[in-house]
Image 1 (cartoon, rainbow, N blue to C red):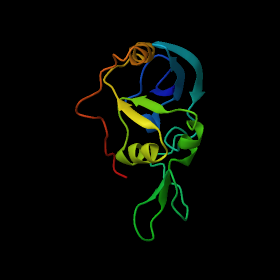
Image 2: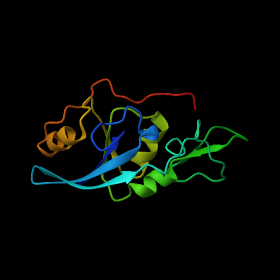
Image 3: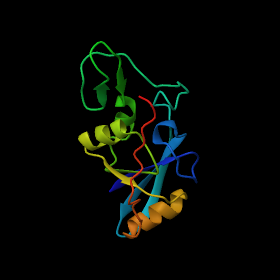
Image 4: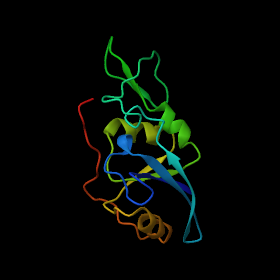
Length: 142
């Protein structure tokens, strides 16, 4: 299984996925986690430094949701495309729309309170990573 971990650097799990600096990618197999690569977050508008991250577009598809009639859409398409080879995303927090879009595209979201990327990957590989029972889906004004 290929897993992405939202990170502020290659060691610390980001508090907010959309604003993370990148994603540490691991392959999990036979209770072992093997680091594959670090992907810099240039795929979200938050990650690119845009305050609200709203894109303008027409139809909705996997990763793109509308805010209402006549309003802009907020697309997670770049992020979903960048993680399309992953089956899971480990994070500490993200907005509910991103959770929905990831799940619609077949990427399981796993919320954890762990802050260390490597410890999280190793614990996940062994089936020992503790889920955050309260969840970490946040609303940040979109």
